[in-house]
Image: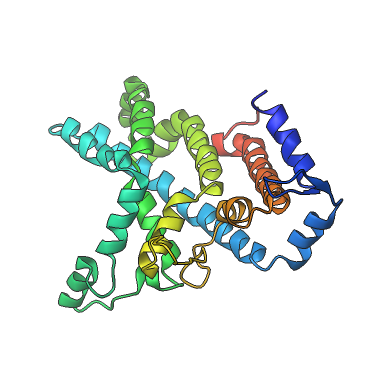
Length: 284
């Protein structure tokens, strides 16, 4: 009911012209040909989504693991440290994105002001096509508290006697991490990577809000906004799905884009799961 029927309906509507008001009309492969041959935004959205998957996901995992390692090794103030690191994750995505856009505003933001004071070149952040995706990545890394909690739970569960045995054998910090910590937490790392890829493939709210606020268009009557500001650098596949489905009411094209997004996410997830043996250092 909640999976098979919506998926089947999406496949059906991808072969129809349907505006959510009039009955759907069968058009065959016309929507598919339009998306893959004539749709002007598909390539840019795919490139942006791939960039976010390749850059944002690894950085979030590495930063979350690093914060988790620090949290489990603190002797004093560990609870305060964990709380402070987790709080950003609780911030509503819209509010957090608006705050970051104002902090990184090239004209009035405090970040560029501080960089100017210490004679470091400033950048345009959300107003610069070259820096908009790195700025979104900074926002994602700032809210890494969810991964920190997962990694802290995994790190605490590593048997202490293995660390003691490694120390007696003369293993240093890197050797203990490589041969004791890493084998114990690799299933959690795989979980973080797979869920991170799926979430990033559905990346919508932060990119849309950042583009609107940075462009000065906040949805007032009479204003129009083309997703992906600046110059399509923050355009993602979910934004295209929403625009086609609920702005232009072209449900057929939206369904094609949804199925494409679903297929890519499934392919990447399957590849990661098939590679889990190499990640975990085992053959089974």
